[in-house]
Image (cartoon, helix red, strand yellow):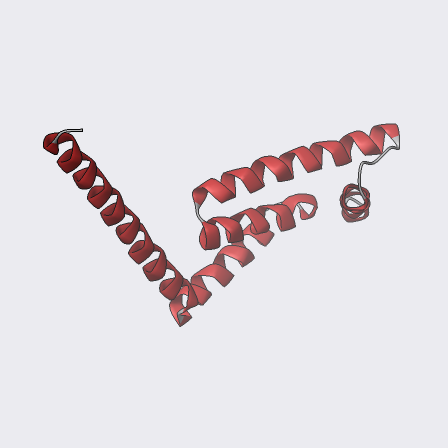
Length: 117
């Protein structure tokens, strides 16, 4: 390696460290906002609004996804949304077939049936 390559590598590492520090600062700012009184009021308001407009069968899942997005970020929220949709689909299939992969799927099916009466 010559000196120019070493300098390039050092600059790349320095830039990556700056990005990580910026991301950590943003995360700290977001967390402090969410823990503040106004952040808690906004979070509770979102929960109330979601419970008002969503069917009972899916409101807990959607609120759970919202909480993951607020606390862990959009990437984790997307993963949670996908997992939740798969689990909800399996619960619906369990209603038709009578076979469930887990107790949580059976609970979801029972909860949605109970709320539709």
